[in-house]
Amino acid sequence: MANVLLVGGTGNLGRKVAQELRNAGHEVTAIVRNEQRASILSPFIQKTILADVLKPDAFAGAAVGIDVVVSTLGKSVSLFDFSRPSFEEVDYEANRRLLDEARRQGIRKFIYVSALGAENHPDLTYFSVHHRLSEDVKASGLDYGIVKPPALFSAFRDLMQLAKKGALVTPGDGLHRTNPIYEGDLARIIVETIHQPSLVIEAGGPVVYTRKEINELIQKYIAPEHTVRSIPLKLALAGLPVTKWHGRNLYDKTAFFLEVIQHDVLAPMIGHTTLEMYLQQRLYEQ
Image 1 (tube, rainbow, N blue to C red):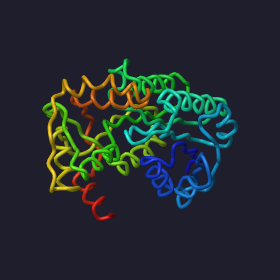
Image 2: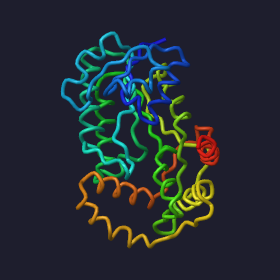
Image 3: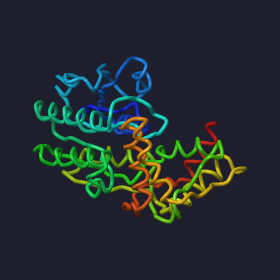
Image 4: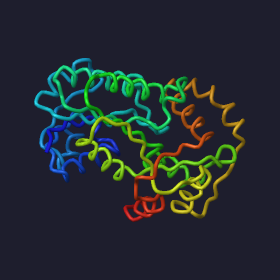
């Protein structure tokens, strides 16, 4: 059993990590923004620290008595998330301060969730901040676990909302492939790294889909009365500069999405849950 500090625990992945930590018998302290957010994690954790992770002193003393820090902290990639902090502020600067505090307190291990292929796209903010933090973790002198998924199922919730409205489109031919992973599967992998030596692990789901197949599956399960339309990739890319008028965050997210759909993004098939299973469960929960 380890004393674990969890940061980013109220996100889609973080909640699953908190649950897996509890199931594995670890003592969990979570840093959350307020009491309302803390209630989300109350069934799974033993202690809460209320702090705004964007403040310079948010992590001061938080790692005292901690063995392992797990960070799933990151800005939402949802296009419907209009929060003002940037990827630089959340994904890099806040995580960097957390890493510095972990070093000061001499914790045993730092586990960070990065992004598959981040090192291949240094000009895109989303990937750049993940790669830089990963390199900082490796150079920290701490034992580490860096977990790199190609995508999480929850990242497709925007597509589900568009599917309901009959507004789901596939830019280009949609033939590039990926194997996204369910948050619950990734959480188990993250928790398993606690007792492993320093490693970088790429972890994907059990099925490879083309981008077109993902969209068509979502449409089929969410609103089969509608169909997925296609638009030329050049048209989508031509509209990218316009998103800057609505702020840097929207531009960074849109640039990220339009880049990844142009490449195969594949990781070893470690997860067990298929996208079809996930979508079926989402329908059951509605």
